[in-house]
Image (tube, rainbow, N blue to C red):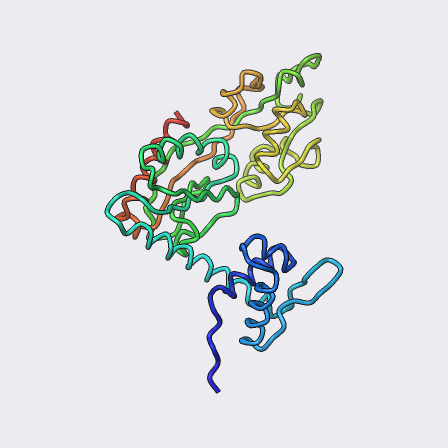
Length: 295
């Protein structure tokens, strides 16, 4: 008996249900009706011969079969998106979609004016920005171009080193009012410190070099760099901030200027995209904008 190959749309629906835990939420995201989403899931279950979700008070819970299927469905979704971006950029003029991956802070605080200028020059260009501290795989085309804080080690990439973004300690003037400012790193023990909740590879290196950055002593912890910056701006306490970013706010006061943390920065893309006009101009715009930001 011949088995009918499931539609790609079924896997897209499957991922949406996985992410949202209900047929109704998946339907809203996909612009489908709830019965259609249900039919997609039923058809996929029939095709693979296994149940994908079980109902509970918390919503639809994935079965072991669903969890086994998930990475393949995510790869299929990334490939489908990359195929669409490649197809949209085959015209001679600079148009189509380019997907950029960057950290939260860079993606939200630094890149928007660079991208605004880029799209003003090329109105046919569509930008997808993935602002996340998770590293997307350029070789698997999860993104076209990435701004990285760790040197890309994969082959088949075009890489441009931007330079070093320096971080220092800052606090809002409202926090410092009536408080004695720290004159040496040890004085931070008398203050509320804003810091990280989870330890990335970069943070673990920092902890070895600067044991004063002890997460156990932080008064405010967040795994989001944006949340930490927001807390510093709100006067919660003293925290680390990129120097060029802090200079934009006259109310942020730099403390312990002798203390700096370096954060090396690169822009990278797959070498196969060098001939893509939309990726070429976007890569150059990111390099120029970030060089200006670092300088």
